[in-house]
Structure formats: structure tokens, C-alpha cells
Image (cartoon, rainbow, N blue to C red; front, side, top):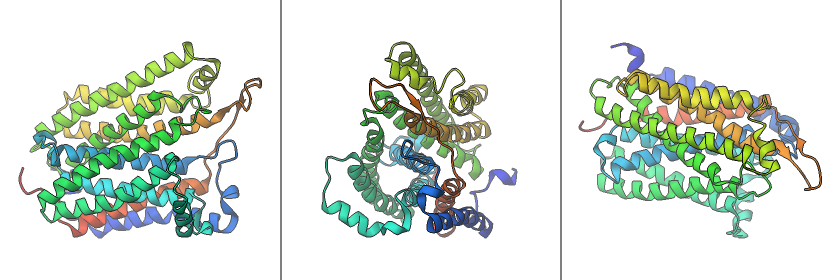
Length: 382
């Protein structure tokens, strides 16, 4: 068996942690720029497009976290045997991704000059319970320690406690991620966001990311031959979720382009007819993230560890561009008044934002490989 397929079989060497720290250290450039010049000069955002790649990165990692948590609950809570695999690593992935997401959102929220702790306490004393953002922050502040507790129970073989923590984590994860989607969908001034399909794509893609993570973990563990039935179960699940994503994407485009109002049609033109996001949408979101993974799954008859893991990797990459298209696309077209013409805005990712996003991925990797190094993540029986 080739060594590249057994990355997770033994304790990871210090090399993986070094690589993770190196990736995280890339963010030092972005931190320096924010410290020296502030956000306005360091980030590519503007008054018209206030949410950029840091919000995208946050929603991307939170989506992976939510999907992994939901997939893990299928084994711990619902006792689905076909999904009872890699449960400890899946829980650790969920925790790691959420920590990385918190790192990214910290720098999005104005960085160190705002003294985030004091700012948070002041915000909470107002108890803005009608604000979706208030509820999102509240739920994820509970979710983070809950995931850490679940990982502890799993590695300590406290299965009854793990059951309850996983159950609470399931409900909290679904509600928290739905609330994140609602933060966007509740904005009636953004036609691309203000729709049911926006929230549906958030949830479906998160579930697909969870299945993808498991398939990648199985391949990297080198246990593909032993876990053939599990590979088939997760591959079929991923195929179904990708098909649903394609269905929602296709009908959303058709309905908004030909059956919606002028504003929706103008928004959809960003993704069609060589609009500013057309390449992202057709080649990266649809082609790389949905159609190619589906082709790999079908060609392998849902039974190849390598093809299924590759399909999962491509899906996760495509999911990032899905988030980019959905979040940025919703801000590029604006009309301050119904009597005015549409205004098309632009957004270009700055080097500071990009390095902070990459740093968030590195932070998530550090947490994961620290868990791999110090905990026994092998399953007891299988």
C-alpha cells in the first residue's frame, strides 16, 4: 500500500504540524497590514461590498464544521451502522474547522483595535434578540465548547456522554448554521440572498462537505479495502446531495432569469452571459464542484476509495466558490431607489484578506494535527 494513502494510519510526524504552522504564519502579513494601515486600506471591501473573502472563509469553514457534526451524529445518535466510521476524526474535524472559522471572523470584525472582548460584552448587554447576527454569535459560542466536550468524551470512550453531547451538538449545529444562512436571506435588499434556495444551498452543501470529509479520511487512513461498505454508503449520499445542489442551482437560475422581476434577472446575469462571476459559476462551482465529482462517483460505481475521496476534495473546493458566488454575487448589483438604474459594483480580494483566510485554514489544520498527535483516534472495533 502506498504511503500517501496512509497519512492518518500512524501518529502524524512533526512535519505535518510544521506545515500547518507555516500555513497559519502566512496570516502574519495580513495582521501587519491591519495593524499598520487599518481595514479600509488593507481589505478589498467597500461601502457597497462590505463582506469579502473573510466572511466567505468563515461561512466555508463553519459549513464544513456543521456538515461534519451532522454526519457524526448519524453514528452517535441514530446508530446508523454504515456511517459509524471515523467518528472521532469527524468530530475533531468539526471542532478544528470551527476554531479556524473563529480566527477568520475575528479579523473580519475589525481586528485588535476594537478590543473584541469588551466590544462583545457591550454588545451582549444590549441583548439584541431580534438580530440574526446576535443569535448566530450566541449559538456558535455554545457550539465551540460543546464540540470540544464531544471530542473529549469520544477519545475517553465515554459513549453515553458522547451520545448526549452529540445529540445537543446536532440540534445546535443545524440551528446555528441555519441562522447564519438567515443572516443573509433576511436581507430583502439583496435579491440573490432573499430566497429560500439560498438557505437550502447552505444546508445541502454543508451535508455534502460532511460526507466528503469522511471519504477523504477513509482514503488517507489507508483502510479503503476494509471499509468498502462505508465508502459506498457515503459515496451514494454524496451523489444524492450533489444532485440536489445541481437541481437547486439549475432551477434557481431558470426561475430568476425567466420568471423573476428585473432585479433578479439582472442579478442572474452576473452568472450568465459572461458576467463577472460566470467563470466561477460554470467552471468552478458547477463543473469542478458538482459535475466532475458526480462523474467520478458514477464511473467508480461508488466503490473506489481514491475516486470517492477525490470527488469529496473537488466538492469542498467547489463549495468555497459556491460561497464566494453567493455572498459576493449578492452585493455586486445594487439599486438605491426603484426609479434608479442598476449599479454594478466590483470586489477584488486583497493580499491581506487572502493571507488571513489562508491563515485560518492553517489554524484549523494545527488543531486537527494536534488532536491526531496527542489523542487515540482509532476506532475500537470495525
